[in-house]
Image (cartoon, rainbow, N blue to C red; front, top):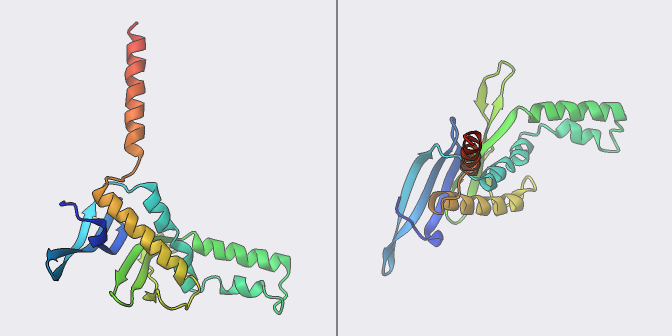
Length: 196
């Protein structure tokens, strides 16, 4: 893939692939003089695992995804003085909330708009039968506070865009290959020592 300048790169989607790696969509600017064209690259798929910096930012979307579904509402009410929940009740509601959250996985984001940027956090929830079902947020406008985390999401989107660019153009991938090379070097040393 031809390298493009970071300033010309505009992330539109990133999500974890079903079999690992990433699915990415982005735009990039191309042109000269006063005319600039936007070229769209849709659903570029890679099976190469991303760097932990990228996967940690996708995981950081989970509390926001869960917050939009109001799963914690009973837990939050139990914490209010008007409700006066006992310690045991509050612990029970926290445990029930955590059981739901453990079944949810944030898988990525989809970005739309140019002036008023909107983001959909994508994810999956595991059903009681073990099947996975799509679970996405509504379109979250980054210039409006509705859920209270939009400012944090805006920063996270910028960080994801940077990490995806580094994944595509700066070869910032998973570090597993480093361990494989390291183990291979030790294996060679062990074989040489056995032959002595």
